[in-house]
Length: 129
Length: 129
DNA sequence: CCATGTGTATCATTACACCAATACACGTAG
DNA sequence: CTACGTGTATTGGTGTAATGATACACATGG
Image (cartoon, rainbow over all chains, first blue to last red; front, side, top):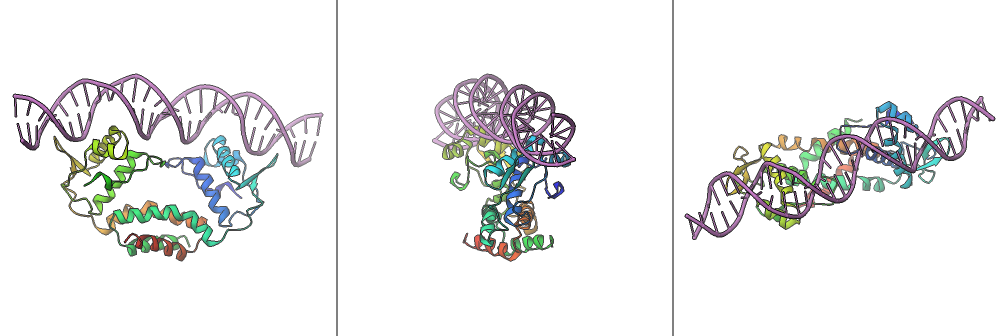
């Protein structure tokens, strides 16, 4: 895996280390990161995105305690072996549930018709090919 | 408007005052709060949700500086007169844009087919009556 | 007029989150 | 063995959220 595949927005309200953890969670659940695959080193990620190595280390540490990654001493961090390929679609969908509930609540507060929201979201998803 | 209509989650990562501001923004844009309608007093909201009056005051202050509310001296805060009824659908949809973009990105990372996401979201929105 | 109800300014205080910099321990690789 | 590359413990600085306690200015409403 390449450090350039991670998206990091230092300006976002969401803390950087959490951006990384959640991104890893999704990339692994979706199978874009395979079990055993070695992650870019803390310094590599930090250098590429101009952030501090400790911030990346914190993210990796959390991901490990969550069972996503495993530490290969002297080599780095790798996707945990237990995480084989992607999970089932319903499991992956569950990772989006909270966010979808929030969208539904906000749409309701905005008195937006469901079709309008679904149309826009559909367009956004398909434009990512 | 009743204080019970506001949803506040002190445990959420999102700061309370911002939860309130954004909720007001949506309720007003959606027309559920009509122009001129009086809001519950700072102490009323604070008492109902067991939070500090100054936290509510901060939210009201921000909402006013944003043009959402206007101060009626001696009476309280009311929905700004300039905000007549709801805005156009596209304007309201724009308030959801950022969140929808995030959903699309996450769905992509999860390798979820667009239909699965749209189905789930549609179900959630329609289950809100 | 005056009691009551608005919002708000002002501190001080507590708590916490985030992140940067340094220095360290450890295993790998040659 | 040694140089290098891992991750990370530690410390400190910075900013922010939220509370609590007053006190104030103001307008309403009886």
